[in-house]
Image 1: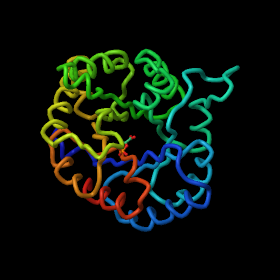
Image 2: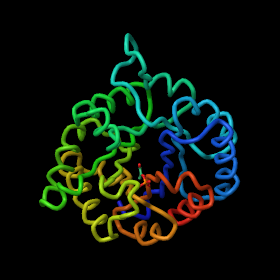
Image 3: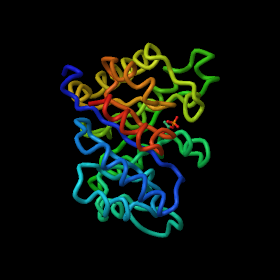
Length: 249
Ligand code: PEP
């Protein structure tokens, strides 16, 4: 499938930022600025702000997702949120395997795959993050690490899911992967998916994440296998985020 047939997609990962009033103001601005966007747009607020975001976006094309979900459908899991709870509210997707969770919560690739299955059971699309650390890249392990992360869940993936390649060394650091480095890894990822899943790999959208901003998005999104971005810091600035969305259109 030619890249042009995969619709551009930009997802804002708001992480653990914002009060209720800040979240509302940010989202209202984003909705106004992205009203005519041709790219698909989604925002992923903290769990407590999800109902607010869904209410505000009810009449807009902006989708709302979670930043994580439990691998279990329900039960004695204090502090966890089930995929079905997100789906019942109106979320259509969930970010899984973000490197902050892999590092801070010790999430393994097997756990991320179990969460992906849980998301699908609830009817959510998965946005699965993969990526290597600086040490792994410098020791020539980048592709091995990403292949291992993909291997665990490749059988779970559906064409409507997306994979976000987020080199850990580029997240929140201001150091973006060069368009060539990013495209190289995206080609590798599509190749891994293709080997396991055939044609479905061509439909899956591959997002780049790691210090994406309006100033570098055009070059990144011009790459054949980069279908959009998972945006952290720049997603907290409505004008910056909207400029990135426009470049993914
Ligand atoms: C992220 O955390 O998903 C991310 C890409 O962050 P940033 O854009 O701030 O690097």
